[in-house]
Length: 545
Image 1 (cartoon, rainbow, N blue to C red):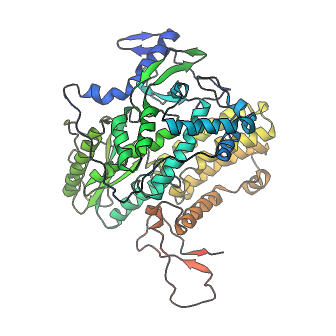
Image 2 (cartoon, rainbow, N blue to C red; image 1 turned 180 degrees about the vertical axis):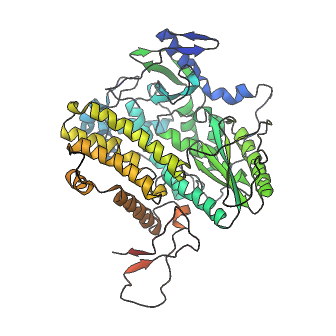
């Protein structure tokens, strides 16, 4: 989403077929053409197929209660309006979020009536289905439109409405446990860190048993843009959505249009017949519903889903057996994705082998796609980079150093409060993300992260380089990184004990039965793992308040 204070920077040139254009109006027009047809990647990649393969049948859930929309309450809409970010851009309807925020008490009632009328009539205002798309560069060749992600800026009222709809939908899905246990994308209490902990636990468990382990990291091309609306409506029907709800969602997808907006320029509107809008509130939840049953095709292998990324992995005493089983599971997953009309990106789908002190051939057997392409074996993946402590420490330092360097070069432009806020919002989240995974790396590597953390604090406090780190923490009022990591780890354990963490993590934390009553009965003893997991140093005792 684009802030008012910033604007999307168009590339100076864009490749159109075999030619390169520098005309901004042509760049915007062709971005719009590219984004509006991105969802047809599967059809374009399989032009010889007269018909698409049938989608995998949805899981039958006979005991699932019927879901219908309930009336939205004025108080809920009022809260949403009051919590709007006034610095976000307006959509194509030019209705500014600041206006809605300031007038919330006055407009909440009629807006609520409008939302509820949409449920009754199964109609959605056309203006709410028009998106201004911002091309966001995600890395690679700046001339290639495939290297840009379309971020949709929707009308403000549309987002408020979708938020209320999404709450009702997710409450229904979560209360009936319809999401796969191995689906971690866009779910409360789940995230990239929890998914990584789960996958790593399985891999390290296999390694501790002196088994081979192999994984395929599956990448899909334009997954969010390729969602087939007809198949998605079928998925919602299988989850107990009433006919009125299905009609509403059908109208939600009907007649959607988009324009590309950048640097004050706006392209003409184009129809969007596939996909869920990236930047919407409902889009992530609907995508999770769309791919939820893919996990059933994994066969004897393990699988984990996070948004449009899928990890398929298995283990065993024989490498040949492991790779054979992985190939069979991979074939099943590919067929499932084909049925959903999602295109495998073979060039970005990678294999990895994990073992410790076990013989392995220099060239293991290839894992192949259904089209006959061999997948590349890789020694690194972005989802497991936290475990490559040396590499991860280097990348983390480089990222933070570049930001701190910018801050120091412009330090005269910041007040003390601005410095404090800037570091808190842009530096600390980088250091905190996934820190429970790499918390037991060597002191040498962790000390290097301490060094960049201390530099950030010196930027805020103006403390000289000779200031002791304990004094730095006192000056800024922040704990050491070691304390932050330990706190985050204790939070994982605490949430697991209270079943506030994903079930796949809660199941790893087991309370030990006391052998006899002691004065320390106010403490909870945890079962210590029989093997040492290098990333999972479970604390044997936690204080119970």
